[in-house]
Length: 128
Image (cartoon, rainbow, N blue to C red):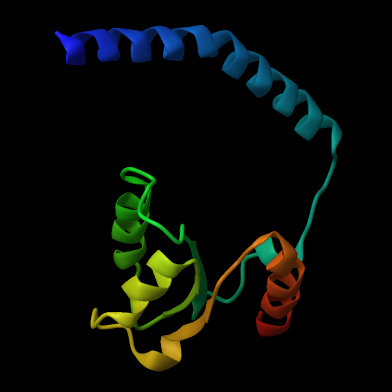
């Protein structure tokens, strides 16, 4: 009975948010159409030999399935051609465990907070 009530409330919340999501999609489509050509060094395609996977996770496990789903997807990346960069304790622990990820492919284990994001961004630009 309690689970059905929670499910009903979750469905009502999702349906109530639908007009907002549709409006956001419309606004973003208009903004991106008027933006013209956009290029940034971090989103350009390279030669395809190596790629970086930035795994940003939480420090604590109070996020439901967020960390487990994120790390499951990160584990699907090809380990021989991927440089793994982790930010957050859960991602660092995941990459530190023996998963076939060699130490040279785990570029950093940096705790990321709001004050360090500029440093992290500058470091990424120097790497790639």
